[in-house]
Image 1 (tube, rainbow, N blue to C red):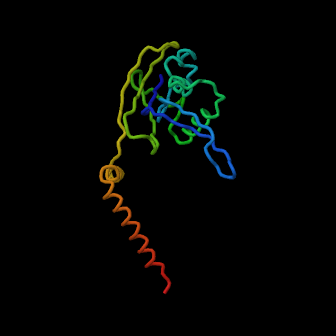
Image 2 (tube, rainbow, N blue to C red):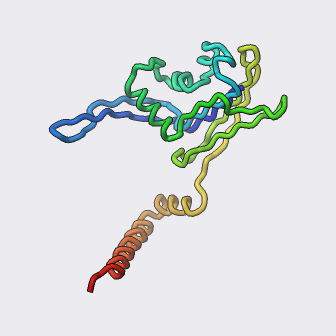
Image 3 (tube, rainbow, N blue to C red):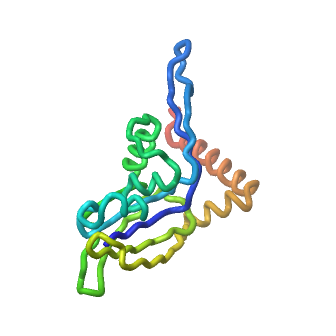
Length: 188
């Protein structure tokens, strides 16, 4: 069994920096279109034990195959692609685990996929694929929505919908904090 959670698709630009006259500047870039903002792939055993490579590629199972389905060539020599994938792995936005699905009974399973703090707020797709003898025998697609709640939601909505009031409030708080620090630490 494989469980694939895919976040909203986005366009990502990766850049290579270089020194020009002693200043670091962007020199080259590559744009990746239609890549998932979050991708977590869990299975109950290694992918090559679940199905042959051509079936995995066709179904988009595995980090390399899911990105290949997004239009990214599968060659591992592209430094922009390597940097992009490594950055997403370090951020926790790409993940692949072969022990991430536990069967509780013949009809029930459990899989935990923590979401990092930096995932986009939108709809996510969960694709469950069941394999038997190397062939896919069942598939179910579900979805969930990531939303902000509490003080974080209040701040984001205030900044987006009431920008003038938000800006004045933040500026006032900064001035007040500065004044308070001046009072507390002045030397008379």
